Image (cartoon, rainbow over all chains, first blue to last red; front, side, top):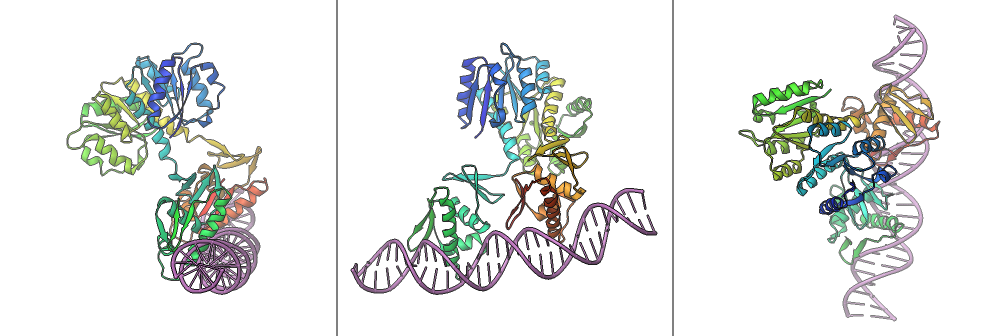
Length: 219
Length: 219
DNA sequence: TCAAATCTTCAAGAAATCTTCAAAATCATT
DNA sequence: AATGATTTTGAAGATTTCTTGAAGATTTGA
């Protein structure tokens, strides 16, 4: 779901955290060299877990530096239990603070809570066959590039993709996508499908299959 | 700084929390009747502190209901220390969890950390596509030169830029930028966009895209 | 209050999209 | 291979949605 950076000088701890976070399908990047961290490109991370006590560099310092450059949630991960330390950590712009030893489920829960907070602010979308459908924007995306579908084309595409595997007659598609009708709407769908196919072909995709005598299906 | 709602059946606790939070100039609203909470207008609060153990209604339930209606940070405040409870709380959409007895400074720090997270998204200037938006002055700047946008033009521009990538209908833009309306406001936006485009074009920018059949989008 | 700036309305022209249609291609069955 | 049914395709016309310019209404500032 998200790309998470974990910084800690304790290798065993890093591996533990990776194992825990990968339960939730997160992509986890580990870093035990705190100095190297300052030269990383943080933009790709959705969340950062930071140990406070590390040789060479202080976690609080690091937090400061990261916060200047990027805006994702930062969670401190540390053995310190003094309340004043917590205050210091949160005061620096960290978003949370987990004390070792921690329960692995608490770690997961806190990480996911912060990620959810981010997701909540974004649009919803779903992805299939390498195509991402952005429901609000009514746009389809392949390889981070926008597919130039018209509104009707997008609706047809999304409908078929959402019900992938199922076959629909042209009439069913027409009725589902536009309000409803009883006219000669089958040829309309045919033409739209032709155009959709043409546009998807530019991305080397042919996911709309003709079911002879019936209609179309997304595979 | 922020308007904070505190819900707890323990009056002494409510007063303690109020005293602590008012140190940071927050406006604090107390509520000891959990049932009454469900009928409140949450929109004005910047953060909500919620006790888990209350008579009549369960804090987790309440969290669910609030989360359906509003998007501000929610922090649980409770005597329970079981890890599984924490997991449950955070899983429900709460953003944090503080266990009683807590240090008053930890409370302040956590509350402020979550508020800061919100504020961070509200700087007084931000930049995108080479355009700097000065929120206070309501001025846009390109290559250190002021773009002569009128107030309405600036607001539309800033709104689209702030939500770059997202498509809005003319009506949505109108409602977001001016109060709200139900008239023929779509043509107003069309004309404003035309004028904005003209002014941005002088800086060789064309960042407002028409999404056919939907509206406009900043790219 | 008046003038200038800004906002809103409107309609004509332009652009994009949708629909129709018929010829060509494909498929299934005999 | 021939036939009839179904689908694909291209192009043209119809429709819907934008853009634009200009004019009237409103607000702002002196």
